[in-house]
Length: 362
Image 1 (cartoon, rainbow, N blue to C red):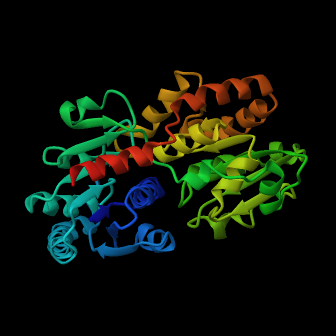
Image 2: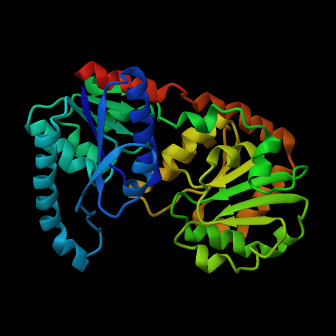
Image 3: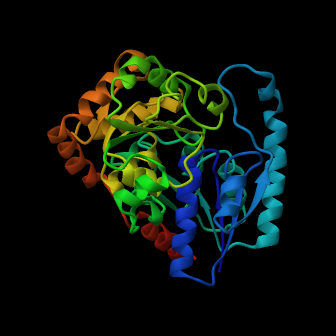
């Protein structure tokens, strides 16, 4: 049995794709899996590290603003369609899976044309344009939020939740071991702050704006993942020089980071929310406004309405974020309420459910 898994661009697409691949291999150890991603994107590095082969397409996104890069888009798309067709011809998959992101469009389009069964997995509460276009032809659509029939044909939808790598939430790491792994002071409460795999400038600026408040709270450990794009800029910042702040470009060991944290401050991507639900953490969500249809705010509000997280608007971060997180970590009753409510959003078997849907198409 052969499976193509396509898509990527961000950790929110790449890590669910890897989790699905792992689940397929667990169900069907003899399965051959090939990833198809976008050249130069995160998946080209992360997928081989997870033990899978990957082929890159020259595809790039179409910018909403008029740019020179948009003039190249038709040529990149045609080239990607041709290469996707060749990959499918050579690999001969029994089924193709799309997880969103640039590469999934050409691959699933060509797979559908060749009558290969296809499935897409939509992580967000607001469907991405690639998945909306593909939904007309694919056989199955796996979703993580209610009400997705406003984007997709209802008869194709299966509610599975978002797949999360099992090592994130199924491990034997103790809090003491986690803090030792990250070189944190063991008897201090810990706040984990991160802005996704590449980082988030506005989130970093909000933390930097609260430097004086952070200086006053030496009794707290702060793990501040600024992102690879911003590490050189922030590693010498005022906050980075505080002895109780650990500044990182990227967190390889997220299992330890989550285990060590008493409170998490982060964006509201679908994968992040799924992880928070499974590791059961009190969280403050700062949705990115720079995403299609403001879907991160919709993701965050789904939790806020259920008393499962707090939200600080991106535009209000510099003024309110540090104050909000310091107040919350001192309010154990509120943290416990958030932890209790967020776990209801967790779907620990999402990857296995999606894998079985994939196998059912073959």
